[in-house]
Image (cartoon, rainbow, N blue to C red; front, top):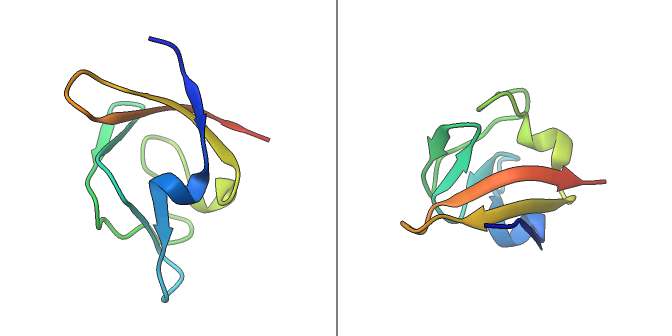
Length: 75
């Protein structure tokens, strides 16, 4: 599989309280996050603070079981 480019807000939702939530099931460095998981600024999942990458494009691919695998970010 090869990675494609996705818009950050196609994968994550920015909530009114400032948290982020995945819109789809994602895998980041082996950690699975489910839709609706609340991610606070400063929280780290799979070594990533997603708030640091907010609005950047995401490199990723879908697995055979429809989990979105994040492989990196575009600056």
